[in-house]
Image 1 (cartoon, rainbow, N blue to C red):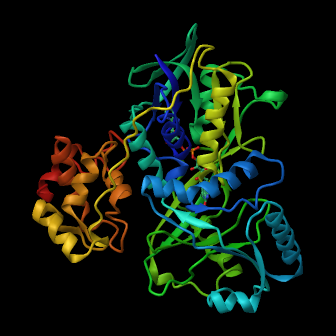
Image 2: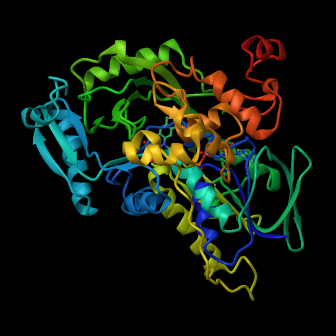
Image 3: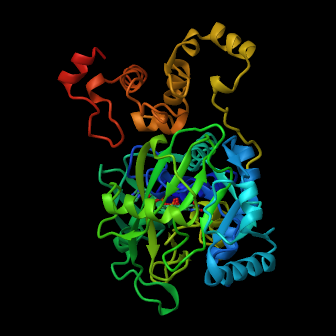
Length: 493
Ligand SMILES: Cc1cc2nc3c(=O)[nH]c(=O)nc-3n(C[C@H](O)[C@H](O)[C@H](O)COP(=O)(O)OP(=O)(O)OC[C@H]3O[C@@H](n4cnc5c(N)ncnc54)[C@H](O)[C@@H]3O)c2cc1C
C-alpha cells in the first residue's frame, strides 16, 4: 500500500516524486512508456519563461512565476543544464507595440525584470532580428533547460531516496477501496495507494475517467476534457557564432506564444512551433503544412534562416485543458484522487512550483490520514552526475580512460560521446532501455549525422548491458524492435 501513486513520469510527475522523496512518504510512479519524459516533456521549446505572459489571477501565472524563480537552484541541485539566455519579444507596427507595452507593464507588476528597446537598439544586440521589428520587450531572466535531463535526474534522485518507479506500466483501471484506490496496469501489475495523482499529460482526462466516468471538475466547471494540440519544429546544427543568442518570441496571439527561435542549452537552435488541434493524442509526426507555417512565421522575427543547417524536424503535443488554466485539484467526486491536468505551456517552467503546490495540498487536506505525520528524511542521497568527456580537461580525460578504457572509444563522432558514457547511461539508476533513452541521456544521435554512425553501436551496447539479444533492442517504445533478427545479423551486432 503506497501513500501516493503518481500516474505519469513527465516533468510534473518526476518533480512531484522528487519532492515527496524528501519525506517519510511511500510513493510510486507508474509510467506507460519504458522511460521518463516520453510525453510533452520530451518535445517542447525547453524555455523557462519568466512568468509575465499568463493572464492575471491564473494558476498558470502564479506557478510560472514561482517555478521560474526556482529553476536555477533546481538544476544546480540536480546537476542538469540551465542557461539564462534572456529573451526578446518582437513587435512590428503600432498594434503589436500596444500588446508589447501591456506585457511590459504586466512584467513590472509581477516583479519580472523587463525593458523596452527600439528595433535598432535590439538589432545591435541581435543582428539577425527581422528588419520589420519596431519595438522589443527584453526579459533578461528567460532561461533554457534540458527538459528530459531534468525529469530524468529528478526521477533518479527520487528512486535513490526510496520512490518506486514502474515503467511500461500503463494504468488501465482504477477502483475505490476502503483505504484508497487500487490501480491495475495493462501488464497486470496491481498498485494500491491512499492517494492518486493523475499527471498523465495528454491522457489525463482518460485516466480521470477510469475512476469518474463523468470527469467532474470543482465548481461545476463541467467534465475535464483535454484537447491535444501539436507543435512542429526545425532543429539547426550548432553554429559559431550562433544565429541568435537569446530566445526570440513574436508578440503572442490567441493560439499561444507563436513561432520562436530558441538557442538550446547544447548550442542548437530550435525554430517553431506551430499550433494545430489534433483528434489524437499521439500525433507527433511532422507535416508539410506545419513546417511551412513555421517557415512563413519566422519572417516576423528573423531576417534570414540558414536552412542548410537543419539537421532534423520533430513535433510535440500540448495537453490543452478546457478551463484555460492548469487544473490542480482533488476530484470533487473521488476524494483522494488529485488531477494535475491541462498542464500545457508554461508547464515546464511551472513544474517545480506545481510539485510543491500538490504536496502542500496533501499536507493541508490530510489526505494521507489524520494520524499521518509529514517528517523529512534524515538522510538524503544525491545523484552522481554523469561523466561528460567532452567537458573535461585532457588530464581529467586521461585519468578516466586509465580507470576504464571504454571512455577512450568515441562512438558518436558528432557529439564526441564515448562507449563508457553510453554504458553508464544504461547502468545508472533509471537507466536507458532504448536507443532513444540513451540519446536523451548522453546525446548520441543528436548531431549532424542523426545517429547514422553510432546507432548500431548503441544497439550493441544496450544489448550487452541489458543482457538481451540485439534483435530485441528497441528504438523507443517497448515491443517495437530497432532491427529485425536478419538485419541485426547483417549489421554484425
Ligand atoms: C510544442 C510544445 C512546446 C512547449 N514549450 C514549452 C516551453 O518552452 N516552456 C514551458 O514551460 N512549457 C512548454 N511546453 C509545455 C510543457 O512541455 C508541458 O507543460 C510539460 O512537459 C507537461 O509535463 P507533464 O508531466 O504534465 O506531462 P507529460 O510530459 O506529457 O507526461 C505525462 C506522462 O504520463 C504518461 N501516461 C499517460 N497515460 C498514462 C497511463 N494511463 N498510465 C501511466 N502513464 C501514463 C505519459 O506516457 C507521459 O510520460 C510546451 C509543450 C509543447 C507540446
